[in-house]
Amino acid sequence: MRSSGLFRASAAGLVLSLAGCATYHALPPPDHANLKPGLAQLNLTVPSDGSGAAPKTFNPENPLTPGEIGLIAVLNNPDLASEPGQLDAARADLLSETLLPNPSVGLAYAFLLGGVATSNSLAASISQDIRSIITYSSRVKAAKVRLGQVSANLLWQEWQVAQKARLLAVDIYADQRELEVRSKELDLLNEEVGQVSAATAAGNLDVTAEAPLLAAKAGAESAIATARMTLLKDWQSLDALVGLEPSVRFTIATPTPVELPDDIDSLVKSLPARRPDLVALRLGYEASELDVRKAIVGQFPAFSLGVAGGWDTSHVSSAGPTINMDLPIFNRNQGVIASASATRLQLRADYQARLDEAEGTSKALVARQQVTKVNLEKSRTASQQASSLADSALRAYRENNLGQRDLTDFQTTALERQLDVLGYQRTLDETTLALSIELGTGFPKTMLVSPGKVKNP
Image (cartoon, rainbow, N blue to C red; front, side):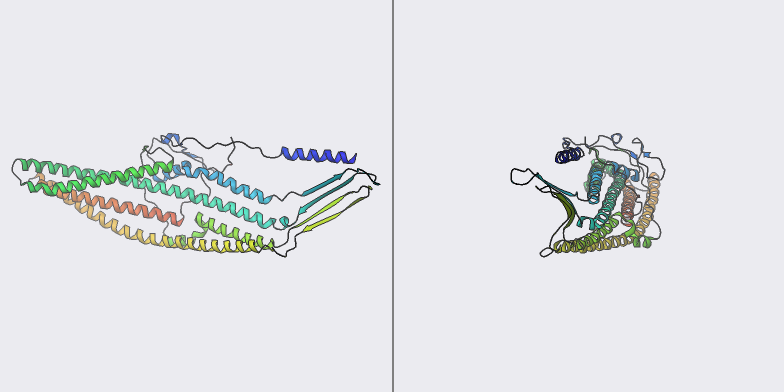
């Protein structure tokens, strides 16, 4: 009677355990591209940062600043779409480490077939792995640290995308300004070539007068073609970064200068505590420290403790503790300890190298920024002087005191000086933006991409 009840209880336990298991759902891969035909089809709402501020939605009909384009890129970048899955995987690893292994249960029942015995025999046991309990704390701490490492890495990836989008927006705006100036220069040359050609046809000028103008015109046309190709490539790169079709265009507002704190040295010194990639590396090293500790504790041999009992065919009942353990003769976890120690040394070297690179690059960008500022001021002064000379030349031309060719030379020189200013301004914007990335300024405390769990369809 007792045996039948035991079997029923075992069967019920098996059914209940199976009922709690996860089930399989098919998740086929996508069969088409997901590029959007316009800004209106993108996610344009920046979620609240947790400070109580309301979510912000951008209007696709308005000009967008480079900073706003950076946020839109984070929300819609195809490569960042896997962020929730990466976080879920890290959470799953943490969950796995927080779960102790199931106890081992043994059950043996033998029917009496003959002999002097009086009953069937039954033996039952239950045991638990003890080493998993000893290493539990180190395993869970390491998994928690790795979850933080994944979050920091994903935050760094988001803002790498954001800054790349901002930089492309700044470049596109500069490309458009450059094209405007070069088009004016080409119009002046075309007008001059037309007048010289007419004078040559009338016999008032020698044919050799056209040669330098035609050479200058060819150079201007080539420069415009190069600028147009650069603009096209920048637009296509930005569209791909935001998740748009490569032909989509929208209005970019005038970029505002990137503001940096005055005390750059303090920012450089505090990089390890602020920049997400350095934080992630430091967390990875902390997890490797815990792995070494776990490996050393793992020298404790595999050990399980339990209870066994039952009755034999004479119906004599017995029960008592059971111990199973490995003898640490051949394997004392030396391989795991050596691997964990080597990984720790490698991560420490990686962290030092990244820290050196971050500090060196930051200081180099500061020096480059200072030189570019000086060059920009000089080019602005030269541009103002050239524009003033061009205005004076135009007045002289209208008073018939200057020829058309000389006027064109003054005007094209002024336009070339404007191009110098645009070039230095672009270099300064790019350098300052790169410096802000290296210094880790402007990073939010949380990710913009929702870290919610991915649901099976």
